[in-house]
Image 1: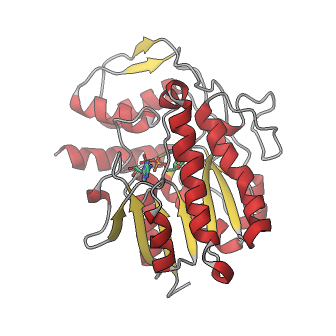
Image 2: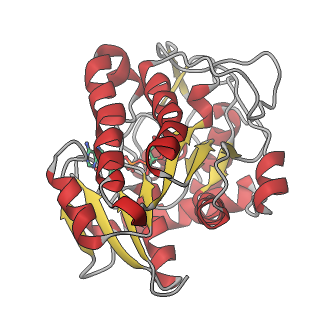
Length: 312
Ligand SMILES: NC(=O)c1ccc[n+]([C@@H]2O[C@H](COP(=O)([O-])OP(=O)(O)OC[C@H]3O[C@@H](n4cnc5c(N)ncnc54)[C@H](O)[C@@H]3O)[C@@H](O)[C@H]2O)c1
């Protein structure tokens, strides 16, 4: 792998910045794209080559032509379910239009077309399947425009394989958590709970707190993504744990690590949220040799310790 070049969109974000660290330590030359709408420069190593840019900007294609990446990891996205419900055209513009802009830049590389890894969402593309854990053969039935735009980009990839020989991998992530997750977003319940508990702020659980998601630690996700890219296999691959956990349990565990004794406040459920989803990860195990290594308790403990250092 040494000497290879990677382009990471969404590099300054939560998962992107962990991926950047790993790629650099694996010997990649890494260039990042990020408009810094939610990502932060402090997530990135000093002197990192970040091009501040929207993925919809045509200038992105010039960057691809300039650096001629071997692999493109595509993370930059509009990823708010509620924004997608209010503004589906904006969501599609960023998540489908931005992805196509990137793919057109890759196609223009001609014979040296880059490998492409698409970060999709297992929590969003399946909707609420009747059989759980959901494996990759579950018919996708997204409940939000965000889920639909993630799925739409998936469907373009085999077409680009025909158009230009694109080699791609699709990873469908569970609910990722870990250090650097933005506590101001709407998705990162672990980050939101931890930050609120450490700063003594009130916090709300939407719904009754019994809905279930599949929480996967960010280092496990980075491992899976690199293995998927190296495999050249298209997937899609669920990247999760196979275990459903509800927000009440997350609240209890994080409260224990934070020494927080207040009770949770419950609010109305949010439109577009999925009630119960966890993902079968047998395919990633069989085809990539990947299994998650970090238990929920260990991952939460490490995450809380990181947030404590930020608060000091
Ligand atoms: N975090 C999760 O639980 C989760 C679950 C499933 C899928 N995903 C996917 O993984 C990817 C990364 O998620 P994350 O949690 O690191 O999110 P994040 O918000 O921390 O990172 C996204 C990054 O993309 C940048 N960005 C947003 N819009 C952009 C645009 N138009 N042009 C350029 N940059 C832009 C943001 O500034 C941010 O740095 C996303 O594609 C998301 O849909 C995440």
